Image (cartoon, rainbow, N blue to C red; front, top):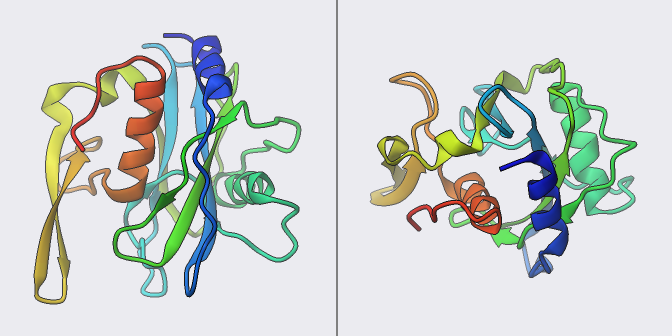
Length: 195
């Protein structure tokens, strides 16, 4: 797997898009692939703990809610990546877009734009980000990383497929970000993650 192969796979994909309906709102994220010592890596963030953030403490891609001043959804993804981790994607057009997803427990439609970089970026996380890190694509498909996340919503407990990317006791990758990661890995011809 190479950065160029990710670029080609994302560019060839015809995304299924969705428009927010009713009370749904729109968000966009930047799925950033960059080179690493073990092959291409994806950039993730661990969101800072914040009672006003429904994804407080979760692993995610840089991104967030669209704003009226954003030119389009891709602009939202680039703006958020700059705000959250200091990435300057303004000169980079996304090489592709993944299928839009609706969150299971929140009224949001998430659009994901894939960016490929040819060098590992220097990151400067802001106050919204506890930790920024990258993970080789090959490590994301290791069976020993697969786990389940217990999501408690009121009296209801749901089990979701997840990936254990960090040390014990740290958040796992699940939900929309897990599903977007699975999409990209499949587009790149890597083993399919459990759904």
